[in-house]
Amino acid sequence: MDGKVRLIAPTVEPNSQLGQVFISVDPSKHLLVNAFGRAIIKTGESCGIAVPLTAILYGSAGAVVQVVRRQRIETRHVEVGLLSGGQVEIREGLSEGDVVVARAGALLREGDPVRPIAVEASAAR
Image (tube, rainbow, N blue to C red):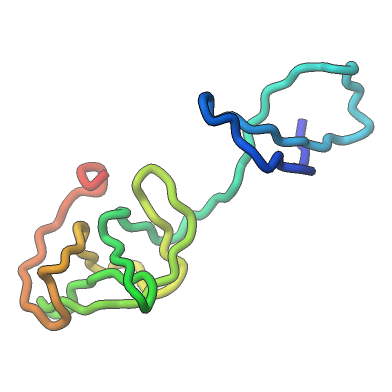
């Protein structure tokens, strides 16, 4: 049965990392008093562009990724979104097909010449 999160408890039990969430369900559904249930709470979903967490550099200007364009490094400011399984959603700043440096490092600078090596998506995880 579907429901909506009504209230999230302000604390999390430190040993088990469990917290309380109060969910409201359709009032036409008949539930017993003190009934127990299990829920899956979907916090977000996206099918946009995602890059490895290691590809993001954070600085005073915000988040950036390094992209290979014409065999040279180009730094782009990005807006990050959801995080899941070591992958980060990029909401703005990248286009489909951009070649991203998977393990961003301080040794690469804007304009440095590089020779990109393609990595399979399953191997990058």
